[in-house]
Length: 213
Image 1: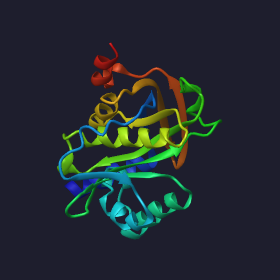
Image 2: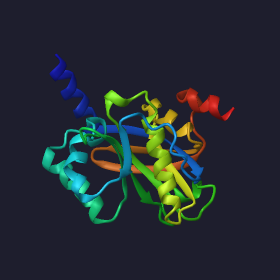
Image 3: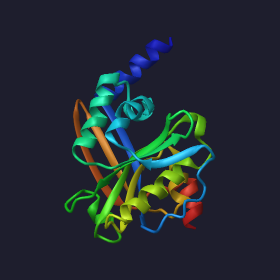
Image 4: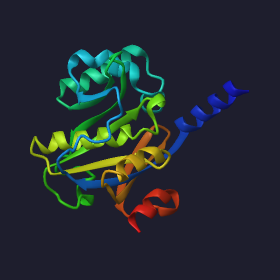
């Protein structure tokens, strides 16, 4: 029965799917280094971390990609120069969280939503190991990324978070992000269309509603 439900779910998504993200922004500020859990090191990743990153990516972000496909995806990001921040267990060296920092180019669909249309980057693929969730590690990763990119000449950050990931929304709100809009992607028979617009659905995100009231 479970296998049948999974098959029907995937079949439906191949025919039609709708995904929505809330768009969050904040200016960049120096990193204080507070709040890092004991036994965790936060640093920028290098190419020697590729296999560990690929192994740590949760299925909710990487889907059911094979090990080889995951490694290829991570390797491509390094090839094009997208910085990656990692949270690593000091003793074991295990990757327990991370995110990427992509520059937002002028002409991007997100550009009209940005309060300060200047040198802005996007936090993407933010993840935290299930064993470390609830310990503010997501907020720490976001803060570290913002501080690092500020040192490289950026002055703003934007992040798209699925409405279905309230913990990630909370991590962003804790470090000063504010909602500025929404992105919606529709897929029908393999054809995908995306759009962004100002405003967001407060009824879907009570945490944001409270933070912005």
